Length: 312
Length: 263
Image (tube, rainbow over all chains, first blue to last red; front, top):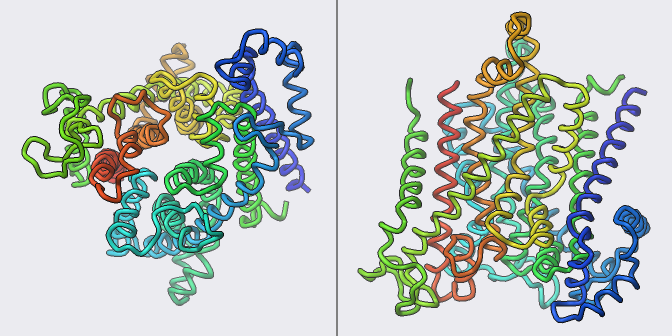
């Protein structure tokens, strides 16, 4: 029962966070109504046109009222029209979101098993050659910015070997080959960090007295690693993977822009470049929802994996 | 104390880039904004790294481009540290409403992916050096806050802090002299990593064309400028990528070396 109460409190706090975020985003982008009118109607609109537009769209109401109205629209699925694309924002965003989910999902699908395997292999025997190799790989890959990684991989696989296409516009329909480079960049950007976290967690667990007990009673090394150590060692990485989501989302924006992939990241980027206020608001809210949801998932995964939290 | 080789290499590279940034006007062989012959390949004596589409010397642009990346990330990280350390010490020591409030603000900010936060700032305020620093500070301060807060909570319960309180030491003294030094080793490692992250973010903003005004050389911007021609002239893109990667790698090596030296 206490788990339910704890979960309820977490969800309440996350909803409160989202409310605060929505207020901040709206404040940053719409507190100055004249600026909004200029962004929507363009530089060359006359002051009269702007004043008329502001009146028509309810901008003469006080800020708090406008915020509440916007929040109500947003919650009920009416996100307005994009001024740059001249299209309904919901219709605009959904396919882009699906494309980005595909990209990020494919990256996670490769990244998670790879980083766990690397982390476990290096954590089981700290200081070994494998361990040193993984550490070096981790430092190298986490230090290269996503756009530079994309440029290096393009130089190798597109210019040098000619194996892969250099852009991922998917102009001729879905293409797995065009997905390879963007996914590779995202995987390389986060695998090293996750592997190091898994390694640290594994080393800590392997140093626990109960592992020595298992060793002394004659359990085989593989049994010790997989039956005894792994479950506890996975607690930290599962949380870390979820907390890595905001970082991966930032990476998705860069990678999509680099490879001209038509996803959520390029949409947000185009919106920002063209001062498309409503579209930026919607995109910002969606990325925050994604982050907050991943935090909640991290909490739930932690509770599910940690038996100490379960019985209560 | 034994010095790990990673630390030595890292410090050497960072020191080199720092010198390059500070003495850019002296070291750069050409004016980074002046046009010569366009699209020269690397190797010529006068233009060892070649020239770009507008005929500007790439080596000189790399040297001048070290300035925004290094100075802006240093400024943003330092400000983030002042805010994060101050708030973290107070929240961890005082707890209560203050702690709850600060922690909530930190959580709210950390729910933004850094780049999304910056894109919102750009649309709201427009691009400028100051806004780049503000956005990066925003993203970093909550993380510093969390580290310092956790250490402050741990230390605040120790006997010697109770002794200091009984002796009537003022709060600022307890925070800065009794508690903060305990956080120093963890913060030294974090500072190097965070400086690297800030450099990555500033480079990425340059790459997105949202960082700094166009004619000024910056590494991310050079990558974007050269991308259209990269198939024929990869040097336009590869050199700035190597520059930023080497800087961040060196900072990671220092962080790793410091961590190793502590154990």
